[in-house]
Image 1: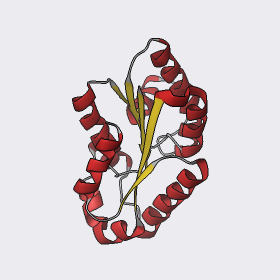
Image 2 (image 1 turned 135 degrees about the vertical axis):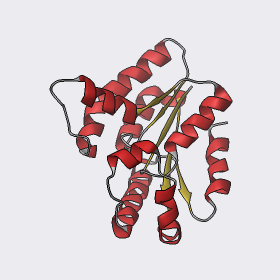
Image 3 (image 1 turned 90 degrees about the horizontal axis):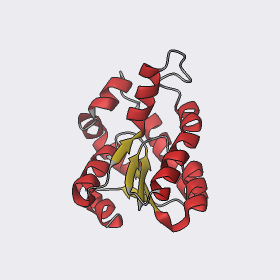
Length: 177
């Protein structure tokens, strides 16, 4: 089985992947690590660190090949990253049918307004390195609302954190059980 964890920044994709690794013992790949490996390892950069759309487009055929290889070898995998946009998840689901479980993580507008400072207190080391400054409140809200619209458009599963992060996070773990 392949688990795809997508969503906006700061939502706990890496945390969820780590918890699923501990539960299922599946190997796990972070698209942030893959991106940084390409940026650090190639003399000619295919993209810059903050070009999210370009990165997603560049990584899609690589992700698809990684999934094909795992499925051909009957191997399990957890893959997480912001670059798994709903339109790409939709293409992967169409190709690999019932062999993929996917979930997008996002915050509701109300959650962001109420927990804006907490969201940034909990950010991972990768996010601190990538984002020298916080997104302003309105941009953060806009990004999460746009992701929700895209999830609805492409019929991608999503979990919207609305009130209690820890309690709602348990729903994500159950989703992959």
